[in-house]
Length: 272
Ligand code: WAQ
Ligand code: MG
View 1 (cartoon, rainbow, N blue to C red):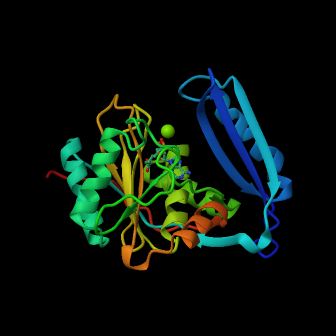
View 2 (view 1 turned 135 degrees about the vertical axis):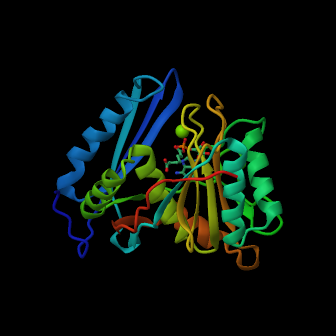
View 3 (view 1 turned 60 degrees about the horizontal axis):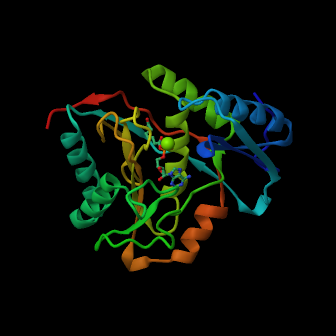
């Protein structure tokens, strides 16, 4: 295991962006101590070269020392997995969970309609997330093409090792789950965020999730039809306590390191 001292927290952000035929195909970030920088850089390069959409033609790596005052250590949410018979019942399950999290039905419908149609202007995928008002369903993100990107989140070596062991026990895993789980952990700790809804833009990845502080991280399959290239994220924000500047500052600049895990529940099958 890499040396990592949470008390010192001199962390480097190691970021990778990869493209193929001038199109972005992969991006990821690791937060590591000085002694972990080389290994993190190598694993990110490997990821770009092994990408499902093809081996990257161009890979950009950047390494930056992080401001220690920005570093927060956090815990991962509990993980639940629900297997639904079809997309319609999976989306109903997502709706039920979001209602429990305090989001209105109108707001959920607005988010889902946007994700289905392509939330960026012209019907494409956004680079980041929509910000959706929890009652009205109105969109608040400053730029509808870019959306709001959460960045600077990763696991400590201890958090990663504990997660991998727990996921392995349940027969689940993968980079996608690990990335989405720590993103959701950071987003749930954001000021004014009530819940998150996500499904991938990867046509082959149909599992999505609903995350909320009281409900944990709920994986739901299939939230879309195989072959569908549309996907995205909605962060539902509390319209009564909207603090857009604090929220954007936190999502973009706070550094979130998951150092402990929640419970991982076995997959549940359900019929609607
Ligand atoms: N911040 C905000 N939004 C983002 C970010 C980010 N850092 N990264 C991606 N998005 C948005 C953007 O609109 C993408 O089109 C969309 O999310 C989907 O991104 O098994 O793989 O990386 O538990 O394709 C979820 C289930 C997988 C994992 C999600 O998303 C599991 C996934 P993707
Ligand atoms: Mg994707």
